[in-house]
Amino acid sequence: TNFTIQAQTWKLIWSDEFDGPTINSSFWTFEIGTGTNGWGNNELQYYTSRTENAKIENGMLVITAHQEPYSGRNYTSARMKTQGKKSFKYGKIEAKMKLPVGKGSWPAFWMLGDNITFVGWPKCGEIDIMEHVNNDPAVYGTIHYDNNGHVSRGGNKNVDVTDFHLYSIEWDANTIKWFVDGVQYYSVFIVNGINSTEEFHNPFFIILNLAIGGNWPGSPDGTMQFPIYMYVDYVRVYELTTNIEKIKNEIPNEIKLEQNFPNPFNPTTNIKFSIPNDALTKLTIYDLLGNEVEVLVNNFLTAGNYNYNFNTKDLTSGIYFYKLQVGNYVQTKKMILLK
Image 1: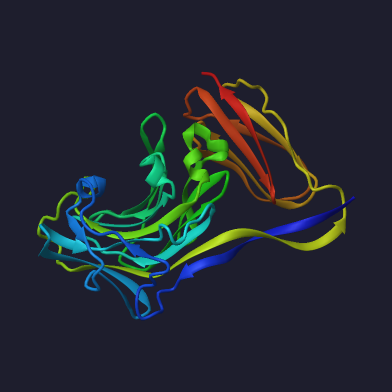
Image 2: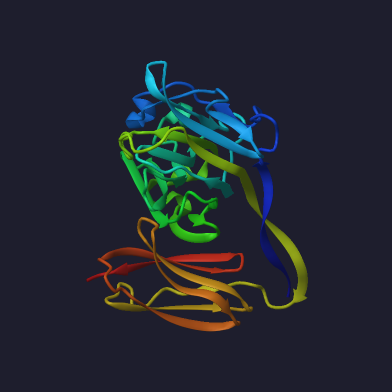
């Protein structure tokens, strides 16, 4: 039987390299003012569109926060968004950035659903690709959404934010994954809108901002020397494309993932699957919230039948999922743990 061997690659579909003399108004618009309740977080800054707060310098976007009296506030900064100009559904979204540190600083690279104007927050969904506060050793990746009220889930990774690093997500119909310099540190499962994550199957726009103070970092305490700077070398967006590499006379490239046994189980269960061709294979366990529990397989396997035992360790009773991904093929099944 003839079949095609396909390779998925990331294709650049939009970027701002910040190489022009000024900020590109066909890409970005500025939020102005203090928003409602300090942009919903009791932040202290007044956002402006002045070059004192945002400009292109040496091939980079520089967002600057000043301590200064301005329109009733004691701090100014900038918040830029692609709303109404550029929005994206799925893909790899990344930015190379260098961040400030100090009590009260809150730089962020994030996204909101295009439909925020109609449904509000958090029903529109929010994807925080990177946030950092104060002198925290970690950056944070988080989603916010509505499930009979505001829900958030996220992870973090230690990194020296005062150096340039690449912060990114890879987002498709199944998962959102967070990376620093290409190394994954967190993921969430959103397949079929599981647990009210349907927000994340709509287009989102991008936001870059440098906030001062607010509910999370708290107010500056006088130890940070203003002005402070957030540097963005570039922002890039890719889509996943499939290229036909070659055609062979082979059996159809299909996979078979069997139901785990026993199911329900306690404390171990066995997962069987088969692959007809040599391929990069990944077998992952997720909890009901879509959090990655354990990766049982993540390497190149030869064609054949496989058995893997899963030990529950410290897991509680409940429903879990296991997903087999072989090349472009994915299968998912449900398992039940009873203790």
